[in-house]
Image 1 (tube, rainbow, N blue to C red):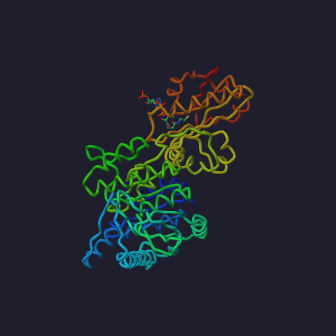
Image 2: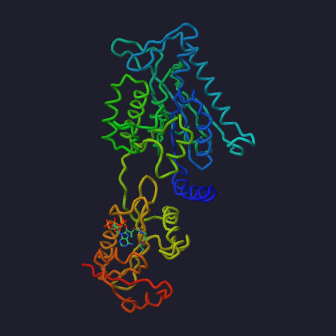
Length: 441
Ligand SMILES: CC(C)(COP(=O)(O)OP(=O)(O)OC[C@H]1O[C@@H](n2cnc3c(N)ncnc32)[C@H](O)[C@@H]1OP(=O)(O)O)[C@@H](O)C(=O)NCCC(=O)NCCS
C-alpha cells in the first residue's frame, strides 16, 4: 500500500475512535519520571491533539525524582515508608519551588505553537488552581509523615466548569489544607481521586514500560479486575522500581475501577505515539484494565451510525453490501443491532419487516479482525429471536457471497417469487442476489 493510501486508511479507521472519544473526560497522570523523559514533548503534543478532538482532559503531573534531586543538591535526603516520602517541614519550600517550576515548564510546552511545530494553531488553554483540598496522612506504624498528604476533597464542580469552557485542567501533586498549608501528595492518588469524583470515562497512567507484561515479557493488552489484582499483588513484592511503578498504576486503576471508573489505561511514556496508538487503533499500545473486555451485543442507536458506516463502507465498495447513506441509516437505525468492543462497533446486522409475517436479515457484517469467532452466529440468533418476538414466521435473506454461510444456519434456497410482493418489487435484478428463506419457530 502506498504511503498516501496507508495514511488515508489509518485516518478513516481512527474516525470511529474520534467520534467515540469526543466530549469524554480523560484524567491523565504524568509522573515526574515522564516529565524527565525525552518523549515529553511528544506526549504534550498528543494530549493537545486529544484536546483538539474534543476530549476533556485533566492532567496531573508528579515531581518525585525532581524533588529528590533538588533536596539532594541541598544535602537533604527523605525517609520513605510504604513507598511514600516522609515530607519534613523544611523540605516544603523546595518542593513548592520544584513543583511550580515543573508546572510552568509544562505550560510553556502546551503553549508552543510555532508554524513548524505539530501544535501550530492548536490554541490550547491550560487552567490551574486550588482544586485539591488535602489532609495530612498522619502517623502510620509510628512514623509521622508530616507534610505528606492525602486527598480530602476534589473541587469537582470547579473542574467541570473549566472543562466545559474547553480548558485543559492541570494539577500538580500538591494539595492545600483548610488551614492554609501545602501538602505533598502522590500524583497517581490525585489522578485517581479526580477521575472518581468526575466519573471520568478513562484514567490514563503514563508508566515507564509498555504496559502490564506476562511471564514471557509479552504485553497484556487487556485485563479484567481479577487479572489486574493478581498482577498487582505480584508486582507490589518486586524490588524493581519499574515493576513497582506498574504495580502502583494497577492499584490506582483498581481503586478507580471499584468506584465506577471502569477503564484505565497503562501506557508507556517512553514510546513516541503510544498514547495515540492506544486510544485510536484497534491493536492499542498499552494495557487496558476494564470491566468490558467482553463485547456487548445491543440494539443500535443514532450514536452508532459513524461506527456502522466505518464497518460497512469497505463491504459496500466491493459490492458485498448494498450502499446505505448516513441519512438512510438514520431512518433505519432502529432495525439494527451492533456488537461493541471497547468503544468501537465491530459487528452489525439488521432486521427489516417486509410483510405481516416475515422479516429480512440484512447488512450483517463482522469486522475482519473478529470474523470466525461466532459473532455472525450470535447476531443471527439475536435477530431470529426478535423476529419470533414480532410474530414473524419466516426470515429471508438476499445475499451475493454468503449463501453457504446462511445455508449452514438453517436457511434454504428460495427464489425471488417467494418474496412478499412489496419486497419483490424492490429486488435488484442486476445484483442477482440469491434468495434464502428460513422458517422460524
Ligand atoms: C459472513 C459473516 C457475517 C460470518 O460471520 P462470522 O462471525 O465470521 O461467522 P461465524 O464465526 O459465525 O462462522 C464462521 C464460519 O463461517 C464461514 N464463513 C464465513 N463467511 C462465509 C461465506 N461467505 N460463505 C460460507 N462460509 C462462510 C467461515 O469459514 C467459518 O467456518 P469455519 O469455522 O468452518 O471455517 C462474516 O464473515 C462477514 O461479515 N462477512 C463479510 C460481509 C458479508 O458477507 N455479509 C453477508 C451479507 S448478506
